[in-house]
Length: 340
Image (cartoon, rainbow, N blue to C red; front, top):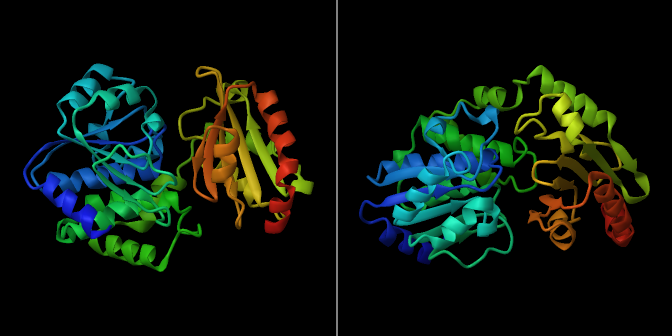
């Protein structure tokens, strides 16, 4: 974090304020972990803190310290709106465009609070008075650690904050295997373990506790996997009927797309998930090498993210979305062949 942003934050937080911390819609481990870690830190600076998420988050994260105090906007819109209206400072974490909050966007745009952005995705919007943006960073949770360091607050780290930030970094780096994991990331992780994060316990709670329904759904996903070897691409599809038949819960498909990417010769993987309630098909993109799924998602599916991990959506039916996706691939043939 540069000196200018550090100074702005120091001035903004020099007296106790009403602060709201917001994550993106369909919050993942990094969104939840970074929001919790920042909140637990700022509470020690005597600020009044609330976390608001646009909608609910997966059960495998609900053991994290502080999760029971998170306000879910679409479950308690009146309370959420009142908190945003009274806020003096709003931190937005793990997203850089207010439309990533879904129905919360309108309430955020009406807020009179000063905004602070902390995020590692590309092409940030300019809505914040203080922006800490670094696309090379492994995760927003790692950025929160560096923010705490810049504010000379590392002595305030405790087991809870270490656990929250470790979880965010672990999940957003694919257990530290993605290219964004640097030597600095490992140094941060080492410090978090020293402070009290139990790395093996966190991994077990996030990754190694599966319901029978989730494992059955994984079986369906693997059965539905299709390969397009001429484009070094694999994709998985899950219909609403298949989700319902296996009692789908938020977070159940987390990581499924990585099975497709793990196949020999594949450098581009996609999972298509039908959502009848919202009338969309949700997509998660993963790649190896230099093929940018961020650009692919932005160009074709109103999405974005990182070079090797991004998301998008389609308003077409599941079958038409898949057909359209396949029809687009020839224009990327050279780029996909280069990374195979």
